[in-house]
Image: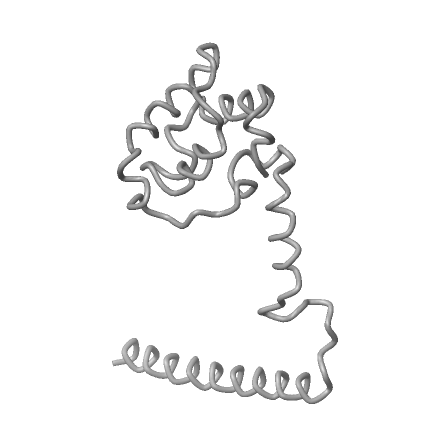
Length: 147
């Protein structure tokens, strides 16, 4: 993900293509994402990159309100089209750190015998409750039909 080097024509072209159907980098209002990308651009894009130039001039009009725009500023490589490689160097380090933390447990870890037994026991209890509930509601339904 990323735009590439926004100080080069190739990066500005990627930005221009990205903004062809968008008003902002993320969402529908100016945000810290726009500020992060704006600060990476060295100056106004050339006139032939009219989507990027339109966006640049619009974000520039928020010069005094930049700090109060919503959102949290992330690394530059976290913004942009997914099919473009991040060449800023900042996004690669962030994704490496995220892989070290396993919040929910890996799927490839084996389940212990105790955990298997406990899971099977709880499933059996649940099925038993469900069957009793069905029987109760079937009896009530039968009673109303007969009466």
